[in-house]
Image (cartoon, one colour):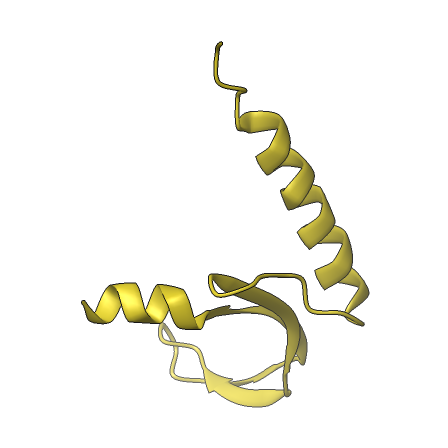
Length: 77
């Protein structure tokens, strides 16, 4: 019996994660492995490295990915 290809499953998981993270209301996860959530970064001042001029950097939405307990345990050995 041939093994099913993982590509359709991974593509479906990506679609779900993209939609849920973009919405920002839930945290999709693979328990013990990874958790994804939407984060925010406040507006701040930065510096143009070429000219040294101070610039304003706007607020932005980001994605936070956290390792689950089983993945952390595997990394620890």
